[in-house]
Image 1: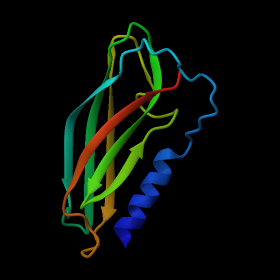
Image 2: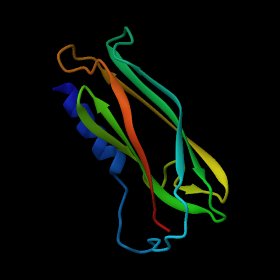
Image 3: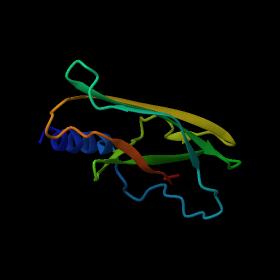
Length: 132
């Protein structure tokens, strides 16, 4: 139960501040996709102090000759339940300069509930969507 509540809260908090009113969306299909690389990932189901720990570090690469702005979404799987961590306009990597990289870090401590705690979490996908 607590894992479901934690995952729901993470999803809500991750997407707060995100809005899409249609202004500034890029219709230009000539931009190459921003690529991503997982530099570090760690999930500890029980750190020994009644909490779990999820951390990761992702590098985004903008191969374009212009700066891009956008939002990323990391899809994770916890014992078969998918949840999402997303960005907003104040997040790291909202803007990535031309032909450069941006690294984002994530860390979350959660309370261990022996019945609901995930014994494994993995990254399923990483998406970066342009807005301007």
